[in-house]
Amino acid sequence: MKLLLIVCAYNEGQKLEAESERIRRFLDRRGTAHPVDVLYVDDASTDGTASRVEKEAAAGGPAASGGALKLIRHATNMGKGAAIRTALACATGDHVIIQDADLEYDPADYGPILEALGRDGVPVVYGSRILGDNPHSYWRYYYGGRLLTLCFNWLYGRRLTDLTTGYKAFRLETLRSIPLSCRGFEFCPEVTAKLARRGVPIVEVPISYRPRSMEEGKKIRWRDGVRAVGTLMSLRWGGDS
Image (cartoon, rainbow, N blue to C red):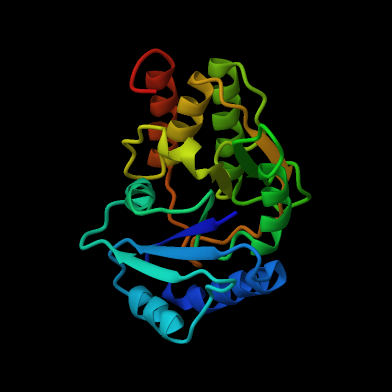
Protein backbone atom coordinates (compact mmCIF):
# COMPACT_ATOMS: atom_id res chain seq x y z
CA MET A 1 0.00 0.00 0.00
CA LYS A 2 1.56 3.26 -1.13
CA LEU A 3 0.69 6.48 0.71
CA LEU A 4 0.88 10.02 -0.65
CA LEU A 5 1.06 13.01 1.69
CA ILE A 6 -0.04 16.26 0.03
CA VAL A 7 1.26 19.26 1.98
CA CYS A 8 -0.15 22.63 0.89
CA ALA A 9 2.03 25.60 1.82
CA TYR A 10 1.79 29.35 1.38
CA ASN A 11 4.39 31.45 3.22
CA GLU A 12 5.04 28.72 5.78
CA GLY A 13 8.83 28.69 5.41
CA GLN A 14 9.46 29.30 9.11
CA LYS A 15 7.42 26.24 10.04
CA LEU A 16 8.58 23.82 7.38
CA GLU A 17 11.58 22.46 9.24
CA ALA A 18 9.50 21.59 12.30
CA GLU A 19 6.68 20.15 10.17
CA SER A 20 9.12 18.08 8.13
CA GLU A 21 10.69 16.70 11.29
CA ARG A 22 7.30 15.59 12.61
CA ILE A 23 6.49 13.91 9.28
CA ARG A 24 9.90 12.23 9.35
CA ARG A 25 9.22 10.77 12.80
CA PHE A 26 5.99 9.23 11.50
CA LEU A 27 7.79 7.78 8.48
CA ASP A 28 10.53 6.33 10.68
CA ARG A 29 7.91 4.54 12.77
CA ARG A 30 6.11 3.34 9.66
CA GLY A 31 9.25 1.62 8.36
CA THR A 32 10.07 0.60 4.80
CA ALA A 33 7.33 -1.95 4.13
CA HIS A 34 4.96 0.64 2.64
CA PRO A 35 6.42 3.45 0.49
CA VAL A 36 5.38 7.04 1.22
CA ASP A 37 5.69 9.98 -1.14
CA VAL A 38 5.56 13.53 0.25
CA LEU A 39 4.35 16.13 -2.25
CA TYR A 40 4.65 19.80 -1.29
CA VAL A 41 2.66 22.34 -3.30
CA ASP A 42 4.09 25.83 -2.83
CA ASP A 43 1.31 28.28 -3.70
CA ALA A 44 3.59 31.11 -4.91
CA SER A 45 5.11 31.83 -1.49
CA THR A 46 7.28 34.92 -1.09
CA ASP A 47 9.15 33.86 2.07
CA GLY A 48 11.47 31.18 0.72
CA THR A 49 9.12 28.25 1.33
CA ALA A 50 10.14 26.54 -1.93
CA SER A 51 13.86 26.87 -1.24
CA ARG A 52 13.38 25.29 2.19
CA VAL A 53 11.57 22.33 0.61
CA GLU A 54 14.37 21.99 -1.94
CA LYS A 55 16.87 21.98 0.92
CA GLU A 56 14.89 19.22 2.62
CA ALA A 57 14.83 17.22 -0.61
CA ALA A 58 18.58 17.57 -1.04
CA ALA A 59 19.06 16.28 2.50
CA GLY A 60 16.90 13.25 1.74
CA GLY A 61 13.92 14.05 3.95
CA PRO A 62 11.26 13.95 5.14
CA ALA A 63 10.46 11.28 2.53
CA ALA A 64 11.48 7.82 3.60
CA SER A 65 10.36 4.19 3.43
CA GLY A 66 11.13 3.90 -0.26
CA GLY A 67 9.21 7.02 -1.22
CA ALA A 68 10.20 10.41 -2.59
CA LEU A 69 9.90 14.08 -1.68
CA LYS A 70 8.59 16.24 -4.51
CA LEU A 71 7.90 19.95 -4.95
CA ILE A 72 5.41 21.68 -7.23
CA ARG A 73 5.39 25.48 -7.43
CA HIS A 74 2.56 27.76 -8.51
CA ALA A 75 3.69 30.85 -10.38
CA THR A 76 0.83 32.85 -8.83
CA ASN A 77 -1.12 32.40 -5.61
CA MET A 78 -4.18 30.31 -6.48
CA GLY A 79 -5.51 28.97 -3.16
CA LYS A 80 -5.59 25.70 -1.24
CA GLY A 81 -8.16 24.03 -3.48
CA ALA A 82 -6.12 24.80 -6.57
CA ALA A 83 -3.01 23.43 -4.85
CA ILE A 84 -4.79 20.16 -4.10
CA ARG A 85 -6.04 19.87 -7.66
CA THR A 86 -2.51 20.46 -8.97
CA ALA A 87 -1.20 17.70 -6.72
CA LEU A 88 -3.92 15.24 -7.73
CA ALA A 89 -3.07 15.72 -11.40
CA CYS A 90 0.25 13.94 -10.82
CA ALA A 91 -0.61 11.84 -7.75
CA THR A 92 0.22 8.15 -7.57
CA GLY A 93 -0.40 5.56 -4.87
CA ASP A 94 -3.26 3.92 -3.03
CA HIS A 95 -4.11 6.32 -0.19
CA VAL A 96 -3.68 10.07 0.17
CA ILE A 97 -3.66 12.35 3.23
CA ILE A 98 -4.03 16.11 2.78
CA GLN A 99 -2.63 18.57 5.29
CA ASP A 100 -1.30 22.10 5.66
CA ALA A 101 2.23 23.06 6.68
CA ASP A 102 1.11 25.20 9.62
CA LEU A 103 1.86 22.97 12.67
CA GLU A 104 -1.79 22.98 13.79
CA TYR A 105 -2.05 19.23 13.22
CA ASP A 106 0.23 16.41 14.37
CA PRO A 107 1.42 13.68 11.93
CA ALA A 108 1.38 11.29 14.89
CA ASP A 109 -2.36 11.07 14.12
CA TYR A 110 -1.67 9.52 10.71
CA GLY A 111 -1.65 6.15 12.48
CA PRO A 112 -5.33 5.97 13.55
CA ILE A 113 -6.38 7.69 10.31
CA LEU A 114 -4.64 5.06 8.17
CA GLU A 115 -5.87 2.26 10.41
CA ALA A 116 -9.46 3.35 9.76
CA LEU A 117 -8.77 3.87 6.05
CA GLY A 118 -7.36 0.35 5.80
CA ARG A 119 -10.62 -1.29 6.89
CA ASP A 120 -12.73 -2.96 4.25
CA GLY A 121 -15.30 -0.65 2.74
CA VAL A 122 -13.87 2.60 4.21
CA PRO A 123 -12.95 4.98 1.36
CA VAL A 124 -12.69 8.29 3.30
CA VAL A 125 -11.53 9.22 6.82
CA TYR A 126 -11.68 12.66 8.44
CA GLY A 127 -9.67 13.51 11.54
CA SER A 128 -12.09 15.21 13.92
CA ARG A 129 -10.88 17.93 16.28
CA ILE A 130 -14.27 17.85 17.98
CA LEU A 131 -13.97 14.18 18.95
CA GLY A 132 -10.54 14.86 20.43
CA ASP A 133 -9.84 16.77 23.65
CA ASN A 134 -8.46 19.95 22.10
CA PRO A 135 -8.25 23.67 22.80
CA HIS A 136 -10.52 25.91 20.76
CA SER A 137 -9.39 28.42 18.19
CA TYR A 138 -10.84 31.96 18.15
CA TRP A 139 -14.56 31.67 18.95
CA ARG A 140 -15.51 32.81 15.43
CA TYR A 141 -13.47 30.00 13.89
CA TYR A 142 -14.66 27.36 16.35
CA TYR A 143 -18.35 28.20 16.17
CA GLY A 144 -18.10 29.02 12.47
CA GLY A 145 -16.78 25.52 11.83
CA ARG A 146 -19.46 23.94 14.02
CA LEU A 147 -22.19 25.94 12.26
CA LEU A 148 -20.87 24.94 8.85
CA THR A 149 -20.84 21.28 9.89
CA LEU A 150 -24.42 21.53 11.17
CA CYS A 151 -25.43 23.15 7.90
CA PHE A 152 -23.87 20.28 5.96
CA ASN A 153 -25.55 17.66 8.16
CA TRP A 154 -28.94 19.32 7.75
CA LEU A 155 -28.62 19.65 3.97
CA TYR A 156 -27.16 16.21 3.29
CA GLY A 157 -28.55 14.04 6.08
CA ARG A 158 -25.17 13.15 7.60
CA ARG A 159 -23.74 13.21 11.13
CA LEU A 160 -20.26 14.64 10.76
CA THR A 161 -18.66 16.50 13.65
CA ASP A 162 -15.86 18.37 11.81
CA LEU A 163 -16.40 19.29 8.16
CA THR A 164 -13.53 21.79 8.10
CA THR A 165 -10.80 19.59 9.55
CA GLY A 166 -7.40 19.95 7.92
CA TYR A 167 -6.78 16.18 8.06
CA LYS A 168 -8.66 14.40 5.31
CA ALA A 169 -7.64 10.97 4.01
CA PHE A 170 -8.94 9.16 0.95
CA ARG A 171 -8.44 6.12 -1.17
CA LEU A 172 -6.82 7.89 -4.10
CA GLU A 173 -9.21 6.41 -6.65
CA THR A 174 -12.15 7.77 -4.64
CA LEU A 175 -10.78 11.31 -4.46
CA ARG A 176 -9.77 11.38 -8.11
CA SER A 177 -13.28 10.36 -9.12
CA ILE A 178 -14.69 13.58 -7.61
CA PRO A 179 -14.82 16.46 -10.14
CA LEU A 180 -13.32 19.33 -8.14
CA SER A 181 -13.51 22.96 -9.23
CA CYS A 182 -12.43 24.64 -5.96
CA ARG A 183 -9.64 27.17 -5.76
CA GLY A 184 -9.61 28.23 -2.12
CA PHE A 185 -10.77 26.92 1.25
CA GLU A 186 -14.07 25.79 -0.28
CA PHE A 187 -12.31 22.49 -0.98
CA CYS A 188 -13.69 21.18 2.34
CA PRO A 189 -17.42 21.77 1.62
CA GLU A 190 -17.08 20.89 -2.07
CA VAL A 191 -15.42 17.51 -1.68
CA THR A 192 -17.59 16.58 1.32
CA ALA A 193 -20.83 17.57 -0.40
CA LYS A 194 -19.95 15.65 -3.56
CA LEU A 195 -19.01 12.57 -1.53
CA ALA A 196 -22.38 12.82 0.25
CA ARG A 197 -24.28 13.15 -3.02
CA ARG A 198 -22.65 9.92 -4.19
CA GLY A 199 -23.48 8.14 -0.96
CA VAL A 200 -19.80 7.65 -0.06
CA PRO A 201 -19.35 6.89 3.67
CA ILE A 202 -17.02 9.12 5.73
CA VAL A 203 -15.50 7.75 8.93
CA GLU A 204 -14.23 10.16 11.61
CA VAL A 205 -11.46 9.51 14.14
CA PRO A 206 -10.33 11.83 16.96
CA ILE A 207 -7.15 13.82 16.40
CA SER A 208 -5.09 16.39 18.29
CA TYR A 209 -5.10 20.06 17.35
CA ARG A 210 -3.07 23.13 18.29
CA PRO A 211 -4.79 26.22 16.86
CA ARG A 212 -2.50 29.03 15.84
CA SER A 213 -3.14 32.74 16.20
CA MET A 214 -3.52 35.42 13.56
CA GLU A 215 -0.02 36.60 14.47
CA GLU A 216 1.29 33.10 13.74
CA GLY A 217 -0.15 33.23 10.24
CA LYS A 218 -3.73 31.93 10.33
CA LYS A 219 -5.12 32.73 6.90
CA ILE A 220 -8.80 31.76 6.73
CA ARG A 221 -11.23 34.70 6.88
CA TRP A 222 -14.98 35.22 7.36
CA ARG A 223 -15.45 35.46 3.59
CA ASP A 224 -14.28 31.85 3.32
CA GLY A 225 -17.09 30.80 5.65
CA VAL A 226 -19.69 32.61 3.56
CA ARG A 227 -18.29 31.01 0.42
CA ALA A 228 -18.39 27.59 2.10
CA VAL A 229 -22.11 27.93 2.93
CA GLY A 230 -22.81 29.00 -0.64
CA THR A 231 -20.90 25.96 -1.92
CA LEU A 232 -22.90 23.56 0.26
CA MET A 233 -26.21 25.06 -0.82
CA SER A 234 -25.43 25.22 -4.52
CA LEU A 235 -24.21 21.61 -4.61
CA ARG A 236 -27.23 20.35 -2.68
CA TRP A 237 -29.54 21.19 -5.55
CA GLY A 238 -27.23 21.22 -8.54
CA GLY A 239 -23.67 21.15 -9.84
CA ASP A 240 -21.34 18.35 -10.83
CA SER A 241 -21.11 15.41 -8.45
